[in-house]
Length: 139
Image 1 (cartoon, rainbow, N blue to C red):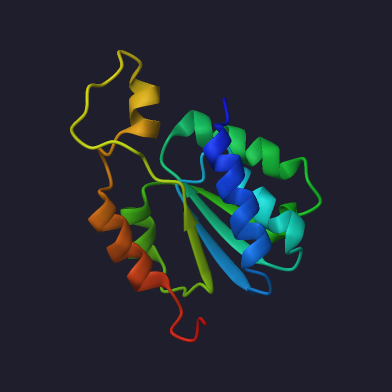
Image 2 (cartoon, rainbow, N blue to C red; image 1 turned 30 degrees about the vertical axis):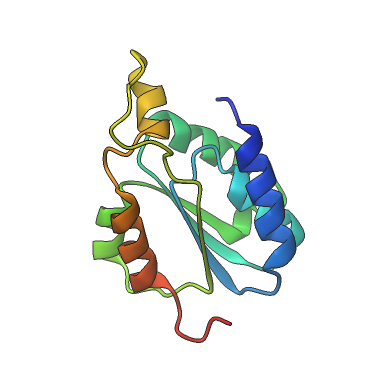
């Protein structure tokens, strides 16, 4: 699966500027890029990574399994809405590289649409989920 430049820049920015967190939630982990970039700079963080797309989930599991941080990262194949109903965990940091577009012309490629267009989780919904999971003591 392809990785875009903005995701690499975002991952580097977050990993460098949010050190020392104990646990993290990655919403829509895709290939696991952001999770792995953060783990590389913050080796003790425990991460839950959630991905709805089966192919992306499989790729994330493969990518994470091939690293030194695999013991600290759990990947879940489900929607973040389903995940939120099944856990009461709180996280020190929440990351997401959400879909970019709402109500725009879509591609004939359904997998591309799922990655780039809001269809299962709106920005408002993402903020609500993040609000539920973000630990109150985060500075």
